[in-house]
Length: 154
Image (cartoon, rainbow, N blue to C red; front, side, top):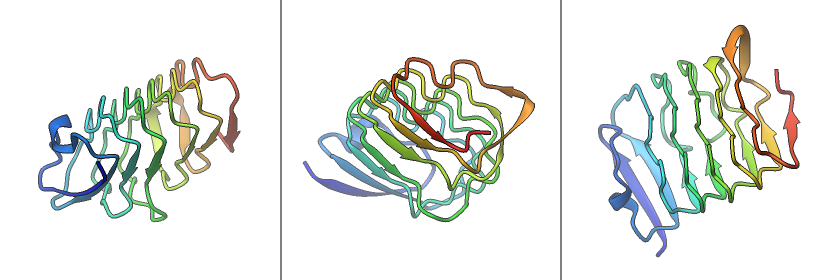
């Protein structure tokens, strides 16, 4: 077990690609449009996306859903999440996640439904640059969170 650097040519990854790894570093080789289910149910503790270009990604639905061991995700400090419209269930049931910095998410979102639902150990979220509209679905965004500090939720 250790760390794995993974160059993703088409955005499609399988859990078997990461079997036995604790840390994953991703670098997309092509432009991708969706990260839907990309890491869903993986048993890893850390994912580094700081080198990945998300500028064309519109859908982050279920991206980390059910990653029960996940403790950290590094999105980097640059703003590449300009096309994203939905983060539905993005971190749902990530029960080991205690803190998440999404300050690099600088976009207007249409769907935050269940984004952090069931993240029972989550205590700190920075979503200071995410913008919503009157039509944004925010159903159960923070459902089943017990102690939480949210930085500048709009």
